[in-house]
Amino acid sequence: MKKTLKISGIMLTLSASVFAQSNAFSLTKILNEYAPTGSTMVIIGSQLKSNMVPGKAKVLFGSTEAPITRVTDDSLYVKVPDNAAPGTTVKVITPGGEKSVPYPYKDKRNVIFDFNSGSGSDYVTSSAKPGPIDGKYVRIEKEIPSWSVIDLIQGNVTMPAEAVTDPSKYVLKFEVNTLKPFDANMIKIMIDGDYHEVNTYLWRSRQPFDTKGQWQTYTVELDKIINTPLKASLNKHKFKLSYHGNGVLDADMSFDNFRVVPKEN
Figure 1 (tube, rainbow, N blue to C red):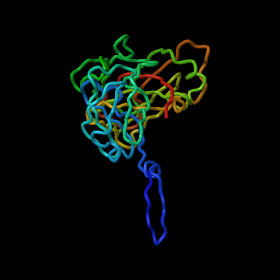
Figure 2: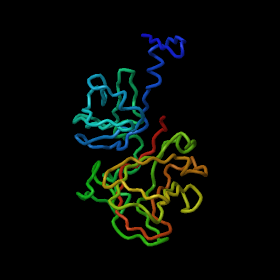
Figure 3: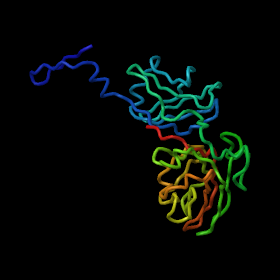
Figure 4: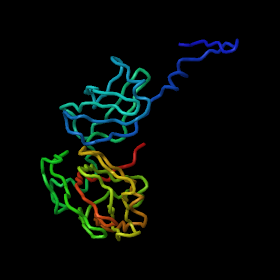
């Protein structure tokens, strides 16, 4: 299909592919990768509204179509099918083509903490508030003094061999839920770390982080945690998520499903 335009007396012929390219959509991530079946999952991208033509566009979990409940330019809201299985690829199909969302639904690869089998924390709960996303989870609801040390999650974990030798190819993912903003103190994520500079990621609260009671997936590039080579000869590595920073935090935060997975575009 071609279209002819007349601009200042000059005739231009443009193929339909040019228009399609100018309206191409992208898929960046799933806001809540572990959204339970029957609940709403949010897919983040760009130029979604103009591409999700009613009756001609759809979202698939594997081969199962998911009802679309809302579309904006950068967000696509879908109801997770009742038969959606962990590890399922999520695809968005439009008249202009189809794309897979980076990372599968409920990725179970290389889970280091799920809090269902073994603890890893003194704060494991199945409380109805904020409510589980995938079984038991960790919740801390207390005032955290400035520069106190609270090791919220810790344990010796097995990591993929390639993640140990080349962390630039991997990310750490987990789900987080805040009922009160994370706006003071600091969270430190360590893998054989020292709370300061070695293998320690500093999650600072320079800007308030608040999911407003909704579970969201949080991603940290693994090489932002591991800045000093790990010993490949070790079978397990010491993982910690700790509060240790300046400012008193009125905390109500929950965490679940820590996993180390290959980086995807």
